[in-house]
Image (tube, protein in one colour):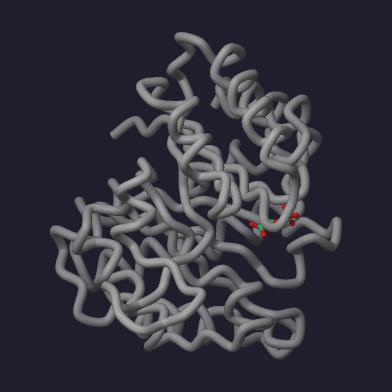
Length: 254
Ligand code: PGA
């Protein structure tokens, strides 16, 4: 199965509303009818409504950066899956390492968020990744397996098809250190074997596995050249339109 590269920009807590809307308009104009790559952006919650309007009908996906695990209720300050779906999001980041490590999100909470997202047809981009310490202790596979087991608990094969997995080694996020493309590929291959065992080969082959962690225009080509890397989750380099477009351009040749 030929998969179009899926390139997503995670803006994190950056840009102003005006900058975000301008970015979205320019992205739409620049990509125009190009369809060799599937592209997406993850703006702040408060920009989602405006940005979804700008990108409506463009084929560019909009993802929320987070959701709460409950459908609704007394959770002051939280945002539900249905709320982001209602404004036009197609995807949502779940289990990003900044949420796991800064906000102490555990696998069971992440699992509940994945389930609530799927229940409203919002596609989770489920992030997994080991810390430097864990890698040095040769625990990468152990950590990834635990995150996959905990995060995907109780999710059926039908639903797995709607999930994108993003492998983001924590030590590579925002640090300028990228995993060697071959090392990243090895972890991707491990993730795909896990999915094969749990859900079968067809599901595993159709699954998108993105790499994230200091992706830049200069390393995007080597990463995308790896057979198990189906796309990229880009943080810092996605905030500037030029570098994000360069990454999309590089990915379009793979
Ligand atoms: P980075 O972030 O590209 O700035 O390392 C990636 C991410 O956190 O998704």
